[in-house]
Image (tube, rainbow, N blue to C red; front, side, top):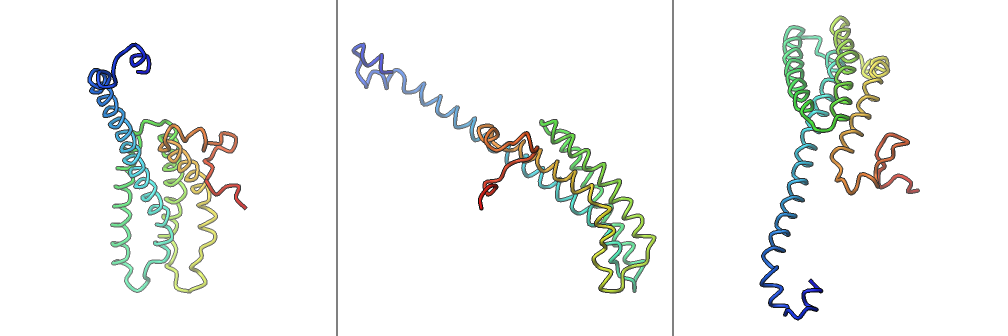
Length: 191
């Protein structure tokens, strides 16, 4: 543009000749940026939904152990219906995540669901065999928490993959630490 001005064209000529083209480029860039932001927002929503149903499935062994003991058949019906709803939502989220463009998200979520079904499913089955909790000191269920720890490791890996996947490209290099395999947070390193 400066070269055109130096060649004797007036600013009015330049605006008249190149203005519409520059406006179209600006509109195109705006649409591209907004589309990218919307896609990341949509994917974050899907990821949050997928992690929410994982948390609900994770809680089922605890809910089953804490079921009401005075109405066993009503509690059995309520909890099995809730578990069926959670499993249906988990299947839906699995399908959505399988369609995700990032292979790291797909693979870590598949591993998380596999661990979830193995460990939490086994604990839920064991919880049905045990009598319901009736004493306050039984509420903690430390043995169940210890048994479910592999799920938390898989969940952290999945959360990191999802966070990296939905971070804007220009910010990924600044936030991803490959040596640790996790995202750095703004407050890391602040004392």
